[in-house]
Amino acid sequence: MNPSIASLICACGIAGLFYLDRDDSVRTSKALWLPVVYLWIIGSRPFSFWLGVAPSNGANVQLDGSPVDALFFGLLLAAAVVVLIRRGKRTRTLITANWPILIYFLYCLVSVGWSYHPDVALKRWIKAIGDLAMVLIVVTDGQPVAALRRLFSRVGFLLLPTSVLFIKYYGNLGRGYTPDGAPMNTGVTDNKNSLGLIVFLLSLGTLWHFLALLRAKEQPHRSRHLVAQGILLAFGISLLGMADSATSLVCFTLGSVLMLLAQLPLISRRPGRIHAFVAVLLLVGVFAMLFGGQSGVTHALGRQANFSGRTEIWTDVIAAVPNPIVGAGFESFWISPCVEKVYQAMTSWWDPRGLNEAHNGYIEVYANLGWVGLGLIVFVLIGGYVRAAAAFFRNPPVGSLLLAYVVTAVVYSATEAGFRYLIPMWIFLLLSIVGASAVSAGYFDAATRQILTPRSTTPHEMSTGKGLKYPGPRYANYSPVAR
Image (cartoon, rainbow, N blue to C red; front, side, top):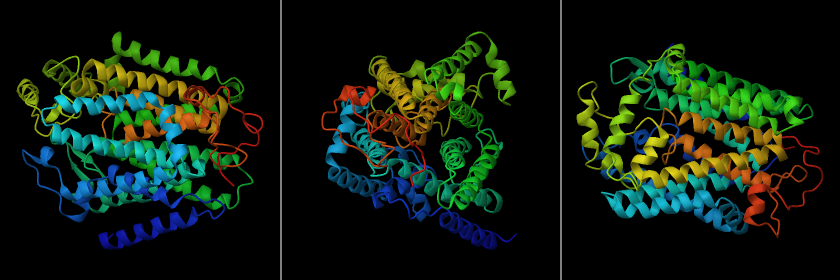
């Protein structure tokens, strides 16, 4: 087929998906388009690339960046701040409730002081604030459940079909080669792992929406919504195969099983049993890594026993960290002189050109923020899991999605840098933790479909859900599809 005709069909198909999924019965804020546009860019390629003014690759590209991209993110952040200020009390309550995240961001800001390039680190920290701001816009929406659904749909309707179009008809945009010369599909992104990540995250949210529609038999225009979400889910599953990213495929499978299991009466009637399932999954992974199962697992996934060279990268990066206690400074390791030690150690077995991450979220944090930063990120993960579990106990349909994102973030970051700013995995992790705090506090209210602002809510109550008065039984008349 002629690429121009394929592009026209794709554009009509995308418009058709938006039309099928329209819903006049719920009203989300127009500000929701801010995180949608944000994820369109974060989940694909820089804004400057789409305008054709991206800076050429060079020695200073990581230091100088792109003025066009800086302006784009600056405008989005400014608009988000204005929206959040107008939602004052709701914003303040959620930020206070998620104080572990706040402490982590504050430590990242302090670490700018010992970075090799403080000006660059400060700019990156400001961009990182945008991740949290976009998450807060979604969670503080007047109808947060509908906002979540529309976020997944609006981002997915554009990125997933366009990725298939690029792979099939625009090889210069949708396909490339790995460092060792093997062909790969990249879609709207610039790397197969990046494609796998955004597809896995959006597909997990789409599956959650699809399951909710199956349960909500009285939902108006349910059939066309099912068609739209079913098509989007089919695109996602297809692209997971095209991306050939084992980590993303495993995480999507894990998250899907977790959500499906949560729907079983055996779990929904006794929510505490979900801990046992999560513990079993983590123990299996630990034993596989520690007692020789690593080779069998990776070979079963079509990968090498050293995780495609990742273990050597981890060793070289750890050895090059300048200060084990505080690291090289926020997002500064790969722009510091220390990186030359990594490149020198790797040239004997691999060409390190283009490498700018440790391919392990925990080691990446250690390289930039040291043991202090690593301890804080573990604290964020533990607190996030506790909050997501509390959300699941109160509201299983929504809580199961948030819990799935937290658990898959832990797994994903074992082989990819999942805790970096402007990375979809980090954004969705923040979304799940902040969203879980809101669910536990009654902000996702089933009866009114709008956020509540309890006058006596304390940070402890926000994180545990205790001491709050809810309108009716915990799960009464709940449907994750707002009517």
